[in-house]
Image: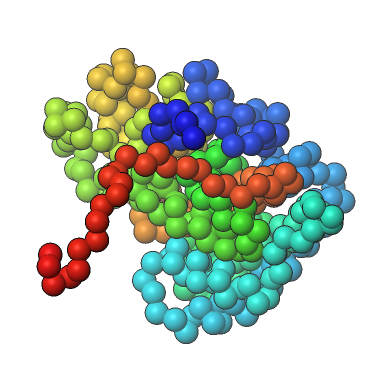
Length: 379
């Protein structure tokens, strides 16, 4: 059988048609279900956005209330799972979430079923809001280690529950900012994590196992792990040393965390929106505004060289900055990504299952053939 040359990273290799997310990397535009991210950022809430991603339309008031009720049901289910997770020892917040997802399989049934030869997508969509609520509750516990945070905020908005778990002095301005942050992180097409989840789901495994795979992919430094690395970079560099740091990194041809994107060849539209929020928050938060000043200085010096190469700050750069200004520790920043992106992951999983075929790429063999086996004692 003849094969064409492999495509490293499967770059630009389509595996499905989608109606979920459209990205124009040249123009720097992002759309969820046909709605520009700027429009959603300015006018929507995370709950509305999550509903849009899953169901393909903006919800009516009745639809939104039912959606929230199902999420709250997932949070209540999570309380039993959290009790089990709390008895296990692990230092990493994302590992706590993954363990929780595995344990939750006995409480949440999300295995695909068939009607004839087709997966019953309606059943998966019905359970998706409950899974979303479950993940949100697990995440809130994972970063706070306080089960009361979940129990006391079972019917809080998504942003408020996260804020109570993350921010020691959670105020309305923090809730508003987190709601906007959750919107811009809610989906981004077939990223490595979404693809990993889709591969697992294509085997007709549980949606919870597919999400566990997504989180594992997310933890890599080339994907969501960059968020924590940006935060630690901003914490470590003294403000007066930023220019020196950037010059050294670029001279040594080392990656500058938070810069560049596989798709965008211009300024990431999500980063633009978060940069604006960071500026507003920094002006009213003198104690933690240094992170913003460092980020501005770092961007300024980096773009003197990188703009000509079409390398700009990405969403992680300004998300990390924004979260630092709010007082969120670096190790608790990546769980925010999970909290938000679960809606997008679920949407892509379910969309693929509508016309499922197990994902099974091929490798081109270039090794030897016909080698003769030699007994161990004669080698």
